[in-house]
Image (cartoon, rainbow, N blue to C red; front, side):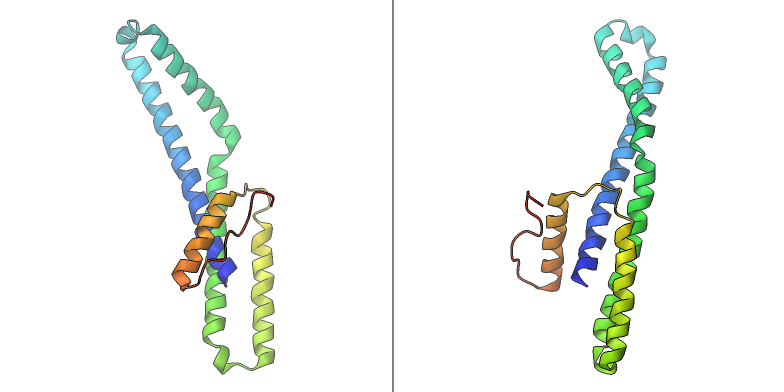
Length: 157
């Protein structure tokens, strides 16, 4: 349950990071496209600045599709949603422990664990940010009223 909680927080952070990056790049490109053309006369006075900014805009316009940021936003948002489902199922299982026998609990736990494994497979081509995992871990512990036992991942992992 704590692992799924951590993944909900982590993939939320990653998704927002990709979204914010994509938004900034799109805004920069839109501004540069508009301003460069609209103020050619003004730019003649500060030639180096507009050439540099235009160059940066051109490079970003080429690189942006290669980064596949939109695809990563979709993937990380999907992962967050799936981890929310897994977390909710674990919480429901935890809440109903008193009303189920050991065999039912074992079967339900295995079903959720299999779903967790399937969701984890979706992460294989996405980058892992150790600092954000550790930050997410601390948030999970705090929200659950648990004590920290250090970092989840260290630099060697």
